[in-house]
Amino acid sequence: MSVQQAPQQANIDEGKVEAFMGKVLGDFSATMTVTLCVIGDRLGLFRDLAEAGPATAGELAARTGIDERYALEWMRGLTSAGYLEHDRSSGRFSLPPEHAPALAQEGGPMFVGGAHQMIPAAMGVLDELTERFRSGGGVTQDAYSPEFWAGMERFSAGWLDNMLIQQLMPEMPDLDAKLRAGARCADVGSGSGKASIKLAREYPNTTQVGYDVADAQLERAQRNADEAGLGDRVRFEKLDAAGGLPQKYDVITTFDVIHDAVDPLGLLKSIRAGLEDDGIYVCMDINCADDPADNEGPLAAMFYGFSVLYCMTTSLAHGGAGLGTCGLPESKLRELCEQAGFSEVRRVQVEDPFNITYEIRA
Image (cartoon, rainbow, N blue to C red; front, side, top):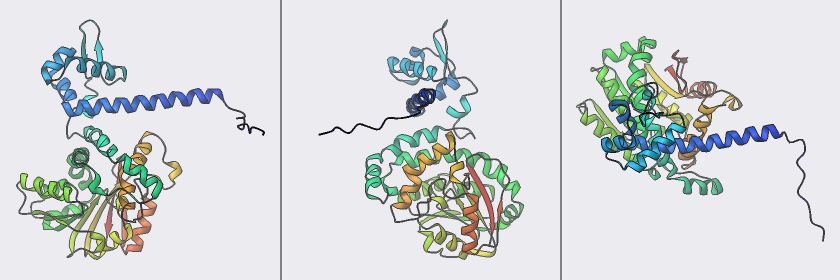
């Protein structure tokens, strides 16, 4: 009996092999670094270093109530990754001030602590997700832990608190005027409700209603509105808006929702039907290329990771379109809006590597 030999690999560039192994090791390193960041965010270690200043392992342990040995290993690990700095003469570790906006300034425009919080929560569905790779279908929203939703809320807060009113509204004067006059507003896929609450605070003449299908998010949203003292003007209801909205609104918004939707076209048709004839629909969605082959680099890789772990799979769980995080580029949105019956789609000219915002007319 002859033994079949494995085909020989011809023309292998050893330099490319070594270069790729360097990338693989870098990605392993990045995974471990993110894991250490998750711990640092949970325990407030970055915040302590930013506010109280450099520390030895013993000083950080005393200040934050953690074990000294773990503190030392954590600090050494993040120093090797370039997140912290170490002064050999004093033995103290420090968080460079240039790193604080990303790691320690909660609610700031660059803060990523919410994304760090989401990662282990998203990994909690990995076993079920792996089975869906084999069988098809997807993972439903109720499979995700409360930590996932809490992280999503923290991550989106940076955009809501620093861009929505300050940067976007000046670029949409007609919308601003409509809101100041006292518009009836609906936020579809309202999540934790922070967008509705933000708009209600800025525009006290408006009434806001948020629609979502996730019970955990609805409970979080109503709690947030009540704590903000806005329960009389902001309310939340469980509704699959693709089946239609209960009344017409002057303003309808979706923030990173359409690409997740089970039926994106049906949802856009419902939004169009629920908009007054002179109404305005604001759609914010992921900043991605029309040609998927042009989605390259770290940001695109992150987008596709979140797509597999959440955006695409939660749509496929209900037999949906499964567009995924990068599945709604500008050309696709314009195509769907035309099919849904909207008259005009305008891209708002605000620089944002994560999202594109559109002002859409009935």
